[in-house]
Structures are given as structure tokens and as C-alpha cells.
Image (cartoon, rainbow, N blue to C red; front, side, top):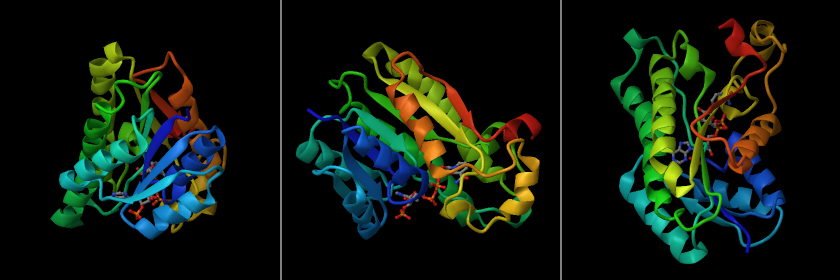
Length: 238
Ligand code: NDP
């Protein structure tokens, strides 16, 4: 029977690229985003059949609870969870609106905590179950104009390491991917020609390069509680 992979934030960017690779590996996908049409479009583009789309805001506990309940009823136990749902709201802290601060923390940090909590009990009976959360090099190194985004991603590092310890005895692995600049909607407004000068590999990363790292962390049976940085060397010079 094929493995069930739940990808939060699977309608675009790194999440969608991870869905593509997982479907090629023979997984059945449950694709989650706030917009059902966008999640459905991902499902329609995937290799294989039986994939399903869900609209769910990961920052709202009731929606997460209901969605994971439906996933289990309709698709069964979960093997993989990828937390790629995320937002950015860049501004100097002094100028940042409190509602933007709340949105960042609720989506990037609390959202991942809620989906992990909802998924875990449905992963207990899967062999080789694994979770990949998505942080950022900014969470490891900090960045001007990204205090709250950085805090949300740094929080994910502590959360991931702690959860990895909590569930290791159940043979569930939990790791964090920390990308640098990857070409997605989130970085579409940035000047790659300027920013790439400060990246040792002199370019932004491709979606597939981030998704390959997600796949590695999901499938590597002896890696847990780790942070994998995929940034063209950026953190070396930050
Ligand atoms: P995109 O903006 O391309 O995609 C974000 C995805 O998250 C979409 O599918 C979006 O769907 C979904 N999403 C956003 N908010 C919610 C929510 N509240 N509930 C459910 N789904 C949500 O982002 P990227 O692919 O670029 O980023 C993916 C992750 O990687 C993020 O956590 C980001 O912070 C992180 N990252 C990205 C980097 C980059 O350079 N691109 C660098 C470092 C980290 P919808 O709008 O339909 O809800």
C-alpha cells in the first residue's frame, strides 16, 4: 500500500515541489492550503491518482483538528508530514504592526505545532514515519527587517529538536530544513541579481533543490532532530 504524505502549504513553492517528488515516489498526497482551488490544482498536476486536496488554515486549531480527522477517515494513517505553510511580513520591528507579528507567529510557529500535534497520533502505526518542518537560515542567523519572522523560524528549531526527542521511542523522526533564498512566490519581489552577490554559490536555489532535501530528510532512516541548511553557502557569510 502507498504511503500517505500530508503536505501543508502544498499549493505553491517548496511544498508543491515536495508534493511532486513524493508523488513520483509512489506516495499518496493530502495537499493542504487555505485555498482549496489552489490545493486542487496541485493535486491535478501530480503523478498518480487518489491524491486529495484540503482547504485549511494551519493557524486555526479547529480547522487543523477537523482536517486531520477527515484525512484519517478518508485516507488512513499518515507516514509523512511536511510543514511548508509559511508567510513573511518584512519590516523593522519599530514599524511592524502587531497584527502582522501575530500572523507570523500564528502561521509559521503555532501552525506547525498544531499540525504536528494533530498528525502524531495518526503516525504511530506507520513504519518509518517522519516529519519535516521548514525553518530558514534567517532563524539561525537573524536578519534586519525580519525580527519576528526570524523568531518564528528560530522557534521551530527548538520545537523540532524537542519533538524529535519526545517521539524517537515511537520511531517517528522530526527534522528541520533551513533554506536560504529559493525561487518561489515568497522571493519573487527580491532583486536576485543584487542579492546573489552575497551568496557563495552566486544564485538563488531552485524549488527542486529544496524539495530534494525534504525528501532526503523524510527517507533517511537514521537522521532525527537535525537542521539541514540548503542555502548555497549563505549562512557561512551571514
Ligand atoms: P510560498 O509563498 O511559495 O508558498 C506558501 C504556501 O503556504 C502556499 O501553499 C500557501 O497557500 C501556504 N500557506 C500560507 N499560509 C497558510 C496558512 N495559514 N494555512 C495553510 N497554508 C498556508 O512559500 P515558499 O514555498 O517560498 O515557502 C515555504 C516555506 O519555506 C515557508 O515556511 C517559508 O517561510 C520557508 N522559507 C522559504 C524561503 C524561500 O526563499 N522561498 C527561504 C527560507 C524559508 P495558500 O496561500 O493557498 O494558503
